[in-house]
Image (cartoon, rainbow, N blue to C red; front, side):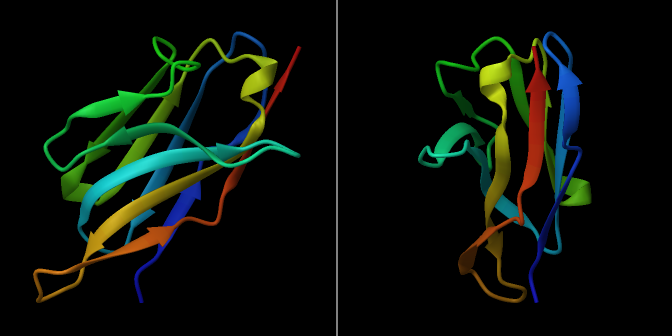
Length: 118
């Protein structure tokens, strides 16, 4: 069974940094990081294609960096200069190749809490 396991969330002061990890049990094609704050809709924070092209929400451009290590089937979200408004549950989402096929399936991680204090 394919899984996405997130880690790296926590409590940090404004201006600090955190690095989130998303480990997949299969080969990742494209992946993204989303976040959902209380009372708000889930939003896309950053995404990366199989070729390494990246895209960021305007609110995190220049502060967050998405990356991937294909050998480890792991994606990362480096978050710098954190602000209180970055507080949310962060989820990874990825298209995973089905073993032995040319098809993919989409999966979500369980979410990890990021809290930024002022």
